[in-house]
Image (cartoon, rainbow, N blue to C red):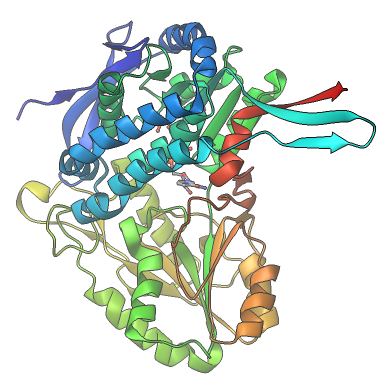
Length: 483
Ligand code: NDP
C-alpha cells in the first residue's frame, strides 16, 4: 500500500510545507513507516497566523447559530466516515481499533456537537444597578488562538480544543502531535467540505519544539490551549510569559485509585479498577498508576486483581480479542521499559508483566509491553512519583484514611483520583480532601462534557469543558450604561 502523504491546512487550502520537508509517521503495531507528515517551520506558522488574522473579524461577526451549524456539519462528515477515522487512529497510535471506534472518534464528534450546542444559549451577564445603570459583560472572541494537542487521544483532544475555540468565534492555528498527525489532517480536509471560511481553521503539522514553539511565541496568537506533558507545559509557560498570553495547560498525572476494605468488589468493579490502569495501554492521562489498597483486604484483593491483569491479552490493535495494543513509539516504549527497570532497581517486585512482548509475523517490529504490576515500593519512590504513561501499576498498601490521603496527595501531580468505598460519609469526606481536579467515586472515566476538566499542582493550569472552555476562549468586557 503506498504511504499516506498528509498536508497542512492553511488559508482554506491543503498545502505542502514551504520547505518541502517531511517526517516519517510510524505504525506502532508494526514499527514500520506508513505515512509522511509535513515537517513545517515557523514560516508555515506565520502563514497560518496571517490567514487566521484575515479571517478572524468576519468569523467573530457570524452568529452563534452559523458557527454551530458548521460545527455540526463537520461532526456529520466525521460521523459518516467513522470507520475510516477509527482505522486511521488505531493505525497511527497503536490503540485498539475497538477503542478508537467506541471512544475516540465518537467523543470527537460529541466534542464538536457539544460546543456547537453550548455556545448558542451562552449569554452575557447583565446587572441592573439601583443607581439607574445597567452593567453588562460582553464575552468577545480573542482573535487568533493556538491549540496544541498530544498523541494519546489524538482526534478526541484535538477537537476538545478547536471546538470551543471556533464556537466562541476565534480563528484557530492548531498543531496535533507529529507522532499521530493523521486524523487531524483528515478533519482538516473535511472542514473545507463542511464550508468553514478560509483561514478560520488552520492546521500546521510538524515538530513540537519548532511548530508548537512558533505558535506559542507568535505575537499574533492571543491564547494557547495545550495538552501534553508537564515538562513541555513549563516550557510553554516560560515562552508565553513575555507576551502575557492566556494559557490553558492540561498536563501529566500520577493518579491514585484508592480501594477501601468496604468496597463492593464485584466482578464489574474489579474490571473497572483493572481498566483504570491499563486502558489504552495506560496511555491516558487519567489512568490510575498508583493502586492504594487497604491492608485488611490487600492480600485477597491482590490475588483477584493479578488474575485479571495476567489474563489481559496484548496483541494486534485490529484484533477484537486484544485487550492492549502497541505503545505509540519507539522512544516511548524505551521510556516505559526504562521505568520498569528503575522500579526493579528501587527494590520493587514485579508481580506480573515487566517485559516487552514480541508478536509474530508483520507485528514483530511493534512496540508491545506486557501489563505490569509492581509492589513493595515506598510511596515516595521514583516509580510512585513520576508519570510513566504506560501499562504499569504500582500496588501500595495503606492502613487507614489518614495514611491513604497522605499517600494519594503526596505527589507533585493533581489530575484525577478514583475512590472505591461503600461508606457514603467517607466518600464525601475523603473526596473533598483529595487534591485533584477530578475525583471519581466507585467509577472511572465517566465524563460529562458540561463539567470542568483539569488538574491541580503540576497537572495544569485552568480548566476545560463546559462554560470554562468558552470563558477561556473569550475576553470578558464590562460595559456600564447609565439611563
Ligand atoms: P508532549 O508535551 O511531548 O507533547 C504535546 C504536544 O506539544 C505535541 O503536539 C508536541 O508536538 C507539542 N510540543 C512539544 N514540544 C513543544 C514546545 N516546546 N512548544 C510547543 N509545543 C510543543 O506530550 P506527549 O505528546 O508526549 O503527550 C503525553 C503527555 O500528555 C503525558 O504527560 C500526559 O499525561 C499528557 N496528557 C495530559 C492530558 C490532560 O488532560 N491533562 C490528556 C492527555 C495527555 P510533537 O508531538 O510533535 O513533538
